[in-house]
Each structure stands twice: as structure tokens, then as C-alpha cells.
Length: 123
Image (cartoon, rainbow, N blue to C red):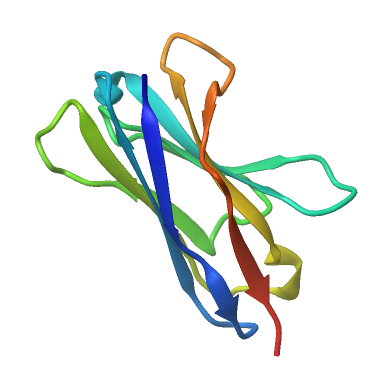
């Protein structure tokens, strides 16, 4: 069983920055991929960034490329890993509930989700 704990989020002004972190623990989490999704009412959930916890290889959605980055910690643990989503130059359209999720690297579906955290970009 993998456990996820999210932190960060909140309110930012346009052009500002926020950071979201997600800590996965339990099984050999180094075998997992961690993704950050976001969702607004009436829209489909969107994958904005993902990182392979063992290698640190990242994926950034085109919609946020150049503004968002994702990284994972370099702590030598295979059962606890933290990934951080750094969001810069925030825009009002980035306002959403952001969810952390993980999938095993051999699977395509994300099977474990965090509780979600609100990000609001407004002046």
C-alpha cells in the first residue's frame, strides 16, 4: 500500500509562484511514477507534470511548459520519496484543484490519489 501526503498550494497573484509537494511512502516507491493533475469544474482532469521516482526523468505538459517544473528528492530511500511541483509565472487559468497520484512504472493508469489541494491565482 502506497500512502500519499500533499502539501502546499493556496492563493497567489498572477505572475507569482507556488510550490506543491507530495510524499509517497509504503511500498518500494522508487518503482513508481508520480504525477500532478489538476481539475476545474466542467473540465477533464489534466496531467500537468510527472516524474519517475527512481530516475528523476520528468514530463511536463505543453500547457505549462516553461512555467512549471517537477523534481524528486535525492534522498537514498526506496520506500519514501517526495516530488515537488514548482509553479512560476502563474496565470488565472492555473486555478484548479491539484492532485498528486502515483502509478507503478509498468502500468499506465494512476491507481493511488492524494486528497487534492486548491490553487487559486487571482489579484
